[in-house]
Length: 217
Image 1 (cartoon, rainbow, N blue to C red):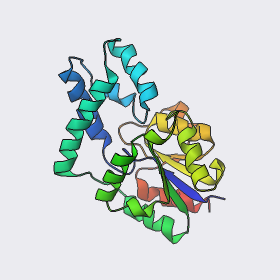
Image 2 (tube, rainbow, N blue to C red):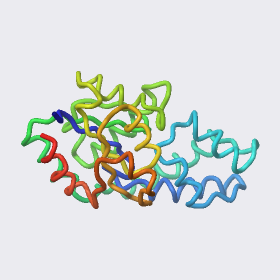
Image 3 (tube, rainbow, N blue to C red):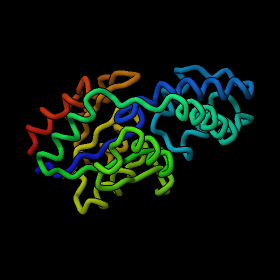
């Protein structure tokens, strides 16, 4: 029986993947690297441990991942401080549904704790989650299963009792390998045929997830 919903954050709760794409490219170009949106797609939900060598394989060993990332964070933080973040469609309806049906919920994200709290507090939903597993809390981030294994453990559940909501292939891989039911709510890209084999469902937005949950409780 389904007992909990585990949420990714960027591109799933917050409409921030488009900002990550914009500012990764802007930052890399500042350092002289021609990063384009298609390059950013490959590192969605990917922890630094895996994103750094991935990008160096594209741009060469001179690509200083951490310097580019730090400048990207600076640009993005300045933008969000001025403009805030947007919630993805259906978020509040889904959280209401989860509460009405006494399900637990957690955020399982590659983003660090400080920014996770900042983003979710701006949307007034931080207090609606039971626990958080963030990128700076685990050794092996997505696409390894640790993030979702820790999320289930923190709720006192087995992964098979949890439904994971993801928008990216790396996140889907993490949740699927952990043993969760995985529902994809695509953001910047649609799942290919291989990825679909790992999914319980594909939903147009978070509100649509309610019908999938209904069939599992």
